[in-house]
Image 1 (cartoon, helix red, strand yellow):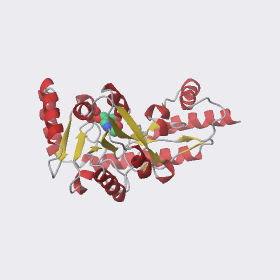
Image 2 (cartoon, rainbow, N blue to C red; image 1 turned 90 degrees about the vertical axis):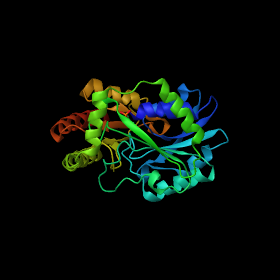
Image 3 (cartoon, rainbow, N blue to C red; image 1 turned 135 degrees about the vertical axis):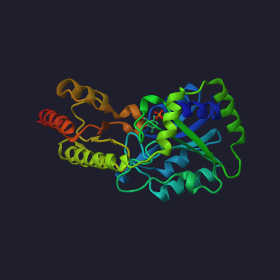
Length: 298
Ligand SMILES: Cc1ncc(COP(=O)(O)O)c(C=O)c1O
């Protein structure tokens, strides 16, 4: 699956002392696995007021001679951001300027609301792109641990990295056979279930977005993809940090959010909500959270 692909790709690409650009906030293995290989994850900011789109200037500032790649997570966990085509192009241009490959995490590619996902793999002319995807989200098979990655490398710049990845793959044993056959059925079968599912998710996204922005002390940008919303804690005088806030909500209201700083520096004073449950469940959670905030801010 994608997490295992990251392990292989980072293992092949990174030596101790190297660095790689990863989005902030991001899915935590991006920082954890890079550190595991003795390298440094450099977190580029994404801008909340701009729908959590990446900050290209910040990205550029972080690049040096030990930078080995730019990682892109689009649609994003935990922000629900969907990057515009011009942003994807700008990232490719930047990568091209510094001769860096782009690592593209597209696990939520078909889970979008208004816009459509654009892959750097479909736009690139010369910049090598490693595209990762899997069955955990769109195909609802998270626990099966199945995924794939492929190279879009028109000029063959990744030959050495590919050889190293192949070597790492030969150390591993394959995923279990029944799951592999099921994956083929999933990937080649009809996708009509997704329309109905996304209609449900859209309803839940609209509901949670509306409720969160009506609750005093918090606000959130509307997610354009995936199934997360990443609200900002506006009222900060009652807690030391976002982690203390999340624990307070858990102990008092019995609603579990994830603290934002766990996703990187841009996650400070934020928290993540997964809006997969039905509206009735989200309603109960938001009623409790609203009562909690009103009580705390009174
Ligand atoms: C951005 C992102 N990539 C990858 C994964 C995990 O994918 P997999 O189950 O294929 O390892 C997640 C799951 O939370 C994710 O949010």
